[in-house]
Length: 158
Image (cartoon, rainbow, N blue to C red; front, side, top):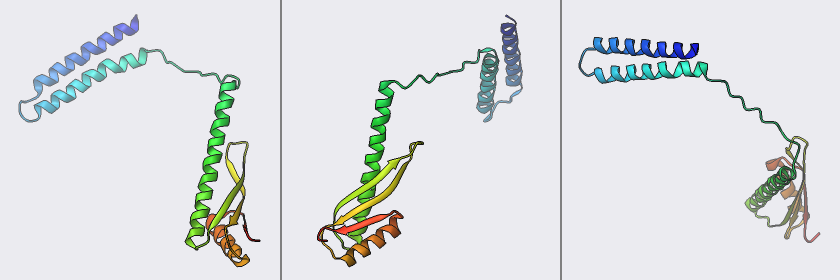
Protein backbone atom coordinates (compact mmCIF):
# COMPACT_ATOMS: atom_id res chain seq x y z
CA UNK A 1 0.00 0.00 0.00
CA UNK A 2 2.94 2.27 0.71
CA UNK A 3 4.11 1.88 -2.88
CA UNK A 4 0.74 3.13 -4.18
CA UNK A 5 0.98 6.20 -1.95
CA UNK A 6 4.49 6.93 -3.24
CA UNK A 7 3.35 6.47 -6.81
CA UNK A 8 0.39 8.79 -6.43
CA UNK A 9 2.61 11.39 -4.73
CA UNK A 10 5.07 11.16 -7.65
CA UNK A 11 2.23 11.66 -10.14
CA UNK A 12 0.95 14.72 -8.24
CA UNK A 13 4.44 16.22 -8.05
CA UNK A 14 5.02 15.58 -11.77
CA UNK A 15 1.69 17.20 -12.66
CA UNK A 16 2.50 20.19 -10.47
CA UNK A 17 5.97 20.62 -12.01
CA UNK A 18 4.54 20.20 -15.52
CA UNK A 19 1.87 22.83 -14.87
CA UNK A 20 4.43 25.31 -13.52
CA UNK A 21 6.79 24.75 -16.46
CA UNK A 22 3.97 25.14 -18.94
CA UNK A 23 2.97 28.40 -17.33
CA UNK A 24 6.54 29.71 -17.58
CA UNK A 25 7.00 28.81 -21.24
CA UNK A 26 6.63 31.78 -23.54
CA UNK A 27 4.47 31.42 -26.62
CA UNK A 28 6.12 31.08 -29.96
CA UNK A 29 7.87 28.51 -32.08
CA UNK A 30 9.35 26.59 -29.13
CA UNK A 31 6.01 26.14 -27.34
CA UNK A 32 5.14 22.90 -29.13
CA UNK A 33 8.57 21.42 -28.38
CA UNK A 34 8.35 22.34 -24.70
CA UNK A 35 4.87 20.79 -24.45
CA UNK A 36 6.26 17.62 -26.01
CA UNK A 37 9.12 17.48 -23.49
CA UNK A 38 6.73 18.11 -20.58
CA UNK A 39 4.45 15.33 -21.85
CA UNK A 40 7.41 12.94 -22.03
CA UNK A 41 8.36 13.95 -18.48
CA UNK A 42 4.87 13.16 -17.19
CA UNK A 43 4.83 9.80 -18.95
CA UNK A 44 8.20 8.94 -17.42
CA UNK A 45 6.92 10.02 -14.02
CA UNK A 46 4.05 7.56 -14.46
CA UNK A 47 6.13 4.64 -15.70
CA UNK A 48 9.28 4.75 -13.55
CA UNK A 49 7.56 4.10 -10.18
CA UNK A 50 5.57 1.27 -11.74
CA UNK A 51 8.77 -0.33 -12.94
CA UNK A 52 10.15 -0.21 -9.40
CA UNK A 53 7.12 -1.80 -7.75
CA UNK A 54 6.34 -4.35 -10.45
CA UNK A 55 7.56 -7.82 -9.49
CA UNK A 56 10.57 -9.07 -11.32
CA UNK A 57 9.51 -11.83 -13.62
CA UNK A 58 12.18 -14.33 -14.34
CA UNK A 59 11.73 -17.05 -16.81
CA UNK A 60 13.45 -20.17 -15.61
CA UNK A 61 13.04 -22.54 -18.47
CA UNK A 62 14.13 -25.96 -17.41
CA UNK A 63 15.69 -28.06 -20.08
CA UNK A 64 13.78 -31.26 -20.12
CA UNK A 65 15.45 -34.48 -20.96
CA UNK A 66 15.88 -35.07 -24.64
CA UNK A 67 12.50 -35.97 -26.05
CA UNK A 68 12.10 -37.96 -29.24
CA UNK A 69 10.80 -34.88 -31.05
CA UNK A 70 13.87 -32.83 -30.05
CA UNK A 71 16.31 -35.55 -31.04
CA UNK A 72 14.52 -36.03 -34.35
CA UNK A 73 14.66 -32.28 -34.99
CA UNK A 74 18.35 -32.16 -34.09
CA UNK A 75 19.02 -35.07 -36.44
CA UNK A 76 17.16 -33.37 -39.27
CA UNK A 77 18.99 -30.08 -38.72
CA UNK A 78 22.35 -31.89 -38.63
CA UNK A 79 21.55 -33.68 -41.90
CA UNK A 80 20.56 -30.37 -43.51
CA UNK A 81 23.79 -28.69 -42.36
CA UNK A 82 25.82 -31.59 -43.72
CA UNK A 83 23.98 -31.58 -47.04
CA UNK A 84 24.41 -27.81 -47.39
CA UNK A 85 28.14 -28.05 -46.62
CA UNK A 86 28.61 -30.88 -49.14
CA UNK A 87 26.70 -28.99 -51.80
CA UNK A 88 28.71 -25.83 -51.16
CA UNK A 89 32.05 -27.63 -51.41
CA UNK A 90 30.90 -29.47 -54.53
CA UNK A 91 29.87 -26.20 -56.20
CA UNK A 92 33.20 -24.60 -55.28
CA UNK A 93 35.17 -27.53 -56.71
CA UNK A 94 33.19 -27.55 -59.96
CA UNK A 95 33.55 -23.78 -60.29
CA UNK A 96 37.31 -23.85 -59.72
CA UNK A 97 37.78 -26.69 -62.18
CA UNK A 98 35.69 -24.86 -64.79
CA UNK A 99 37.99 -21.85 -64.36
CA UNK A 100 40.95 -23.96 -65.51
CA UNK A 101 38.95 -25.77 -68.24
CA UNK A 102 38.80 -29.16 -66.57
CA UNK A 103 35.50 -31.03 -66.48
CA UNK A 104 34.46 -32.72 -63.27
CA UNK A 105 32.47 -35.95 -63.22
CA UNK A 106 31.97 -36.51 -59.50
CA UNK A 107 32.82 -34.87 -56.16
CA UNK A 108 32.66 -36.81 -52.88
CA UNK A 109 33.07 -34.81 -49.68
CA UNK A 110 34.14 -36.83 -46.63
CA UNK A 111 33.35 -35.02 -43.40
CA UNK A 112 32.52 -35.50 -39.73
CA UNK A 113 30.51 -33.60 -37.16
CA UNK A 114 32.36 -32.85 -33.94
CA UNK A 115 30.85 -32.99 -30.44
CA UNK A 116 30.32 -29.22 -30.45
CA UNK A 117 28.29 -29.49 -33.65
CA UNK A 118 30.92 -28.08 -35.98
CA UNK A 119 31.55 -29.75 -39.30
CA UNK A 120 35.09 -30.81 -40.15
CA UNK A 121 35.92 -31.70 -43.74
CA UNK A 122 38.42 -34.55 -43.82
CA UNK A 123 38.97 -35.03 -47.53
CA UNK A 124 37.46 -34.27 -50.90
CA UNK A 125 37.60 -36.93 -53.62
CA UNK A 126 37.26 -35.54 -57.14
CA UNK A 127 36.87 -37.64 -60.28
CA UNK A 128 37.56 -35.86 -63.54
CA UNK A 129 35.51 -36.69 -66.63
CA UNK A 130 38.50 -36.93 -68.95
CA UNK A 131 42.04 -36.09 -68.26
CA UNK A 132 45.62 -37.14 -67.94
CA UNK A 133 47.70 -37.43 -64.82
CA UNK A 134 48.96 -33.90 -65.53
CA UNK A 135 45.37 -32.64 -65.42
CA UNK A 136 44.85 -34.47 -62.13
CA UNK A 137 47.96 -32.88 -60.62
CA UNK A 138 47.01 -29.44 -61.95
CA UNK A 139 43.46 -29.77 -60.57
CA UNK A 140 44.69 -31.08 -57.23
CA UNK A 141 47.19 -28.25 -56.81
CA UNK A 142 44.63 -25.60 -57.77
CA UNK A 143 41.92 -26.99 -55.49
CA UNK A 144 44.23 -27.43 -52.49
CA UNK A 145 45.58 -23.92 -52.95
CA UNK A 146 42.16 -22.31 -53.40
CA UNK A 147 40.08 -24.30 -50.92
CA UNK A 148 42.76 -25.26 -48.41
CA UNK A 149 41.43 -28.83 -48.17
CA UNK A 150 42.96 -32.24 -48.72
CA UNK A 151 42.15 -33.31 -52.25
CA UNK A 152 42.28 -36.67 -53.94
CA UNK A 153 41.92 -36.10 -57.67
CA UNK A 154 41.74 -38.95 -60.15
CA UNK A 155 40.61 -39.34 -63.69
CA UNK A 156 37.77 -41.49 -64.96
CA UNK A 157 40.16 -42.97 -67.47
CA UNK A 158 42.96 -43.93 -65.03
